[in-house]
Image 1: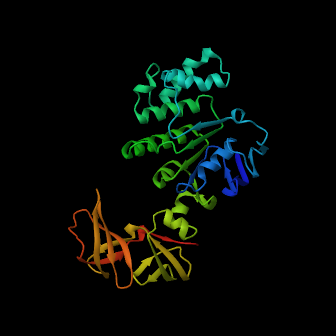
Image 2: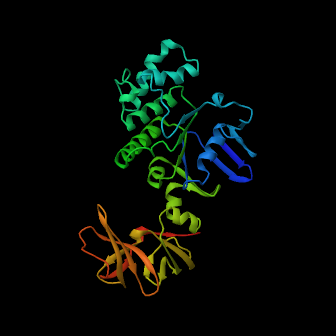
Image 3: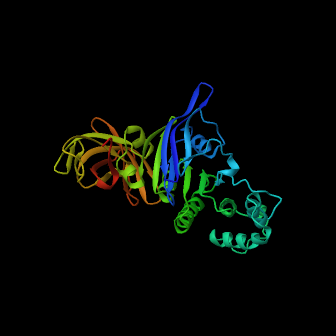
Length: 336
């Protein structure tokens, strides 16, 4: 393992911001620290970089403890939410700053800057003033600057959160391709599930300073460890059921869950886990919100209220009767 984090705890006075964090990160792997605001994910990242003192615990690289290694000698590259570019310098000078800080000979700067700008999709931007860049372009320059000295670990703290939704999605796709093509080892902090799942190989979900679950992206998404993690990952309805031979029977109907063990199970339903259908459980619409590709509904059933969706073409309003059926693509098994 390249990076190893063991039992890291960070206190701010009597407040515990991070408690007993344990993580491993292999060469070429991307791990996302995912959680709501205030969950401790940025504090944990800063502790790993050496910017935040730890109360307890160790951070090591290839087995070597980093406690006595200053931040600028750890070989880590940092990209923050606002990029922190120098407004009085052009693009090339901003990128070359990282090379200067690591004593790369000046004669090599121009070639390395050109390589990096090509890597982040900004070839020919060397003399562009950073004040003339769009938000997405500025973050690409910040990324190029962090990559300039070829860090052994890239740390990204909410790098896309300041961008509008469309640009954030495209830049996340581009960044994911760059990280994988370049085999860069990276640690990402984000509160955005889509961003984490686009960029990362594994995720660690934090809440109240603790890592509640860590694992491969698909595994965490399909099998959240508990209801806290499930709610953060978009589950809005929980159902008790009984599994037998790969079928779970609930008060809202039966659904195929091939890997569910026989016996009592707890299902979590995301909003698209219940869909309007010609038959199924009867309910009454209490609210309807039209989205780009579907209608988001709140439906009152006999003994509960649930979220559901309908096709974008559906003309549904509060008071309308509907039937709901379970969609296997929108369910999780909680706590397995």
